[in-house]
Length: 347
Image 1 (cartoon, one colour):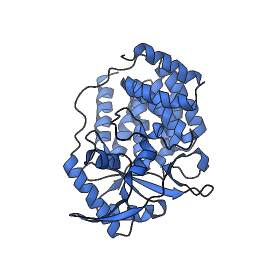
Image 2: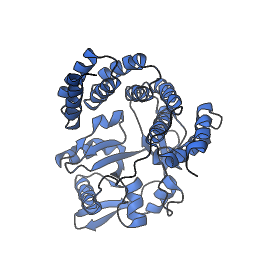
Image 3: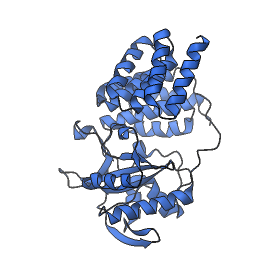
Image 4: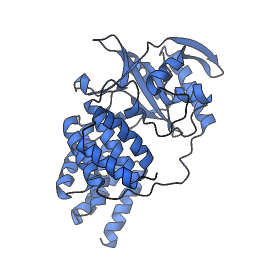
C-alpha cells in the first residue's frame, strides 16, 4: 500500500468519523479502484453506505467483498449485518454462522481495560425526566423501561455502566412520540438499524434513546414488545411478553410524567432476579420473557457472539452462549465455541 492510498484511506476514515458520508465514500472508492485487495477500504466503504442509509449499495459491495475475501470473518460479519438490515434474515443467519465459525479458529483479541465512555448520570437522568414530561404533555403514555427502569428502581439512579436510556410506550403512539422528541432535537440513528421497534435516537449531547413500543398479541391477548421488522412474518421477530402496564402520574420538577405503578412486575418478567447485579446479562438474548428463539433473535445472537469473541470479552461471551445453548442444545457450532471458551476463557 503506497503512501497516497494510505492518505486517501485516512481521509476517508476522518470523513466517516464526522458524518461526511459522501466524501468518505469517494475516498474509499479511490482506494479500492487502485487496490481491490485492501480489505479495510472495502469494510469502511460498506459501513459508510450502511450509515448513509444506502442499504442496497451496502449489500451489493458486501456481497462482492464476501467473494473477494474468502475466510475473512469481519467482512463476512458485515455482509450478514447488511443481509439482516435488508430483511434477508435466513440468509443472514447462515453468513453470521460462517463468520463465527471462521472467527473462533483465531485467538480472541485482548479485551480493552480502559475507562468506559463517559455517562453523565445526573445530566442524563434530568434529560430522561424532561423527555418523559414532554411526551406526557404531548399525550403519549411513555414510561421508563428495561435497563433504565432497573437502575431507577434498584439503584435509585441510572445504572453507572449504562450507554443509553429506554422509554416504553404504546406502539400505536410511536409516530406521535417521534414527532414530539424530534421537536426537541433528537435525531434517528441509522434508520434504527432496520427496525420499526425499538426506534433509536441521539440527543445533541450524544445520549442515545430507545423508544420501545408495546402492543397486544392478537392470538393470545398478551402484552408484547421486542425487536420488530416490518414486511417479515411476525413469528420471525424477537418478541417478549410483559404484564399489562398500569401507569400512574408522578409530578416532578421537570413536569408531570407517567410511570409504572408496579415496576417490579416488569423487572421480574424481563430479568428474573433483578435485585442482584449481573453485569454479564444480555438483555436481548437472555431475557426471561423471550417468547422463542426466533429468526431475528438468532441473527442478534450469532452477531453478538461474534463481536464478544472478537473483542475478547469472554465472560460475556460464555454467558450469552449458555442462553443460546438452552435454545439449541445440539448446535455443533455453539458446542465448538463452548469447547474453545473452556480452553481460552479465564477460570
